[in-house]
Amino acid sequence: MSLEGAPIPCKRCGAPMDAQPDLTLRCRFCGAWDRLPPDELGRALEIRGRLAMAASQVAQVASSEAALASIFERRSAFWSVMGPWPLLAVLVTAYAVFGAVTTLSGLPAAVPDDVRIDLVVAAMYGPFFVLGITLSFPVALLVGRISYAKNVRPKLAARPPRYPGAAMRCRACGGDLPPARDGFVTCRFCNSQNVLAADLVGDVRRGLEQEMVGYRARASGMLAGTTTASTHMTRTVVVCFAGVYVGMLLLGAVAKVVLAFTL
Image (cartoon, rainbow, N blue to C red; front, side):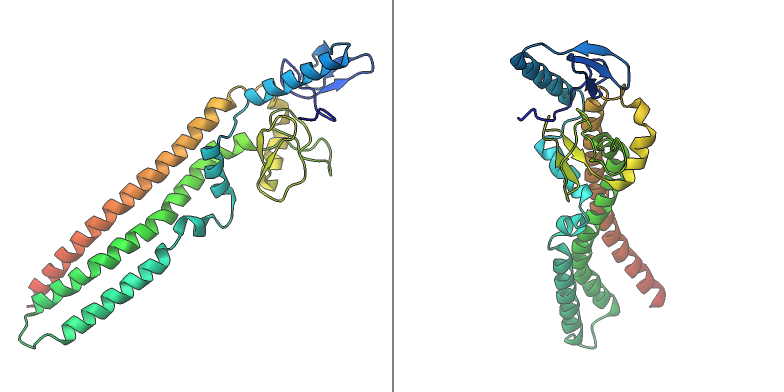
């Protein structure tokens, strides 16, 4: 890791400190004073240690959490989650309709109406099952995105720039982040993942005075929030599956009741 241009996080609050020619340091946020070692190796080791400490005090994104968060940040996440299910639902529905029409047209006129209705209901079980699965994924994605936006996204947001036109700053060490087109960018100083989102800059800017006290609480909060989002999505899928089965049973029951009243 290159230390050229690296920020020097404050040991008290984690904010970047201003270095003076005499190697003294002053934190622009909490006002703490400090001093760097006089030798070059000592200074490099001191800065590396402070960057590692800053990165350890904020929520770090592991591989599974990063993959989950990237799904919520990408606009094309809907199609990634849906996969081939919409096409499969269309094919299964078309096949079921064709099979039902072919079967009913080939039945003798003496076949009772309740038998015909039972055949139609049976033919609809497959399409209803596939459609239930297809619809459960976007519903689960919506629930997960709501939970992610509330519990996780604000904790991963990069700090706002020091002045208009400047680079966004790392949420961990405060260093300038490299330009990036993706929603996520890795800090070149402490390797922390940062979310670059324009709609978050204003909120983070308004809460800039609070950044000196909030980083230690983020580590447990991000992991708990990601787990909550995953749990909500899993529960939503289970509920959708249960709803499909209940709907199939109700469909058959309603069809029989309607037939009983019409005959």
